[in-house]
Length: 104
Image (cartoon, rainbow, N blue to C red; front, side, top):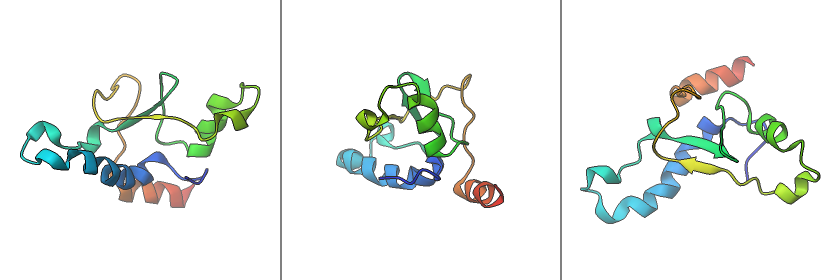
């Protein structure tokens, strides 16, 4: 469960730890690494912008639905490759994100 006011980059470490369990089998394989620079999120084929809080994104993309409770938990796709350069900007390191959060 995530808070509505948090940003996706703030949970990247959790995601990395979760998926690393699936990659532990062959750590010597260079294709078996999680590249956090390529990580991005999608909902209903729409890449989600990292610089909006999760709650804002949820409201934005589910507000037209008849009942939002039927879309809980919010099912998004976490991509580990094929970053959509033309649609999203890559997020900086977590310190920049935290600084951005503290000033907004």
